[in-house]
Image (cartoon, rainbow over all chains, first blue to last red; front, side, top):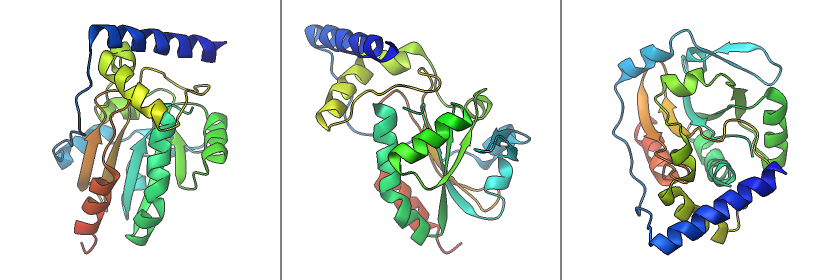
Amino acid sequence: MQLIVMNRIFIGLLAGCLVMGCTAKSGIKEKAMKNPQMLEAVSGLTVRNLEGKSVSLEALWAKRRVAIVFLRHFG
Amino acid sequence: MFARQQAAAIIKIQAELNTLGVSLVAIGNGSPEQARDFADKFGFTGELFVDEGLQTYKAFGLKRGFWKTLGPASVVRGFKTMGQGFRQGRSAGDLWQQGGIFVIGPGNRILFSHINERAGDQADPKAVLEACRINSNI
């Protein structure tokens, strides 16, 4: 049901955009590298692993390099 | 559908990241059970975590909002993404939350960052790999 509603909303908005002649900005805009101080904001935060246990976020990159991807949602 | 596209893009570069000594970590905002389903469905073999409260998303300054997901630019990008064969599936998590990618470490060293401006906006996987290559001898 949720899936059908989402698809209908999407198709409706798509049709509206086409009528209005909307266009997406082309290309992928890369952000400037952020200041390492930014990571102070994540100090003390935790995430949960698939067993439900809390894991320190900082520990993920303390001793290694990681590519950390924030997913929009699982779907 | 954009989430599927994002997953496909990162899975595609996972082997090369590993070769460069970079571990792939993904954080989603659903439950651990939904994360497990996601990994099984898409063949994601990196480390997977969840943050249902979105605290880490906020701390990293990631975008969130109705128009970030269903704004005109996202809708048009959605049309292109559908053309690439991706379809909207049953979503699990916050529909209005946007994602991003960061290459970090060891320690508090940020080697690459990209914050998705809206649904359908993603980092160029080649740029991610290039940042890893440049910093591979540090």
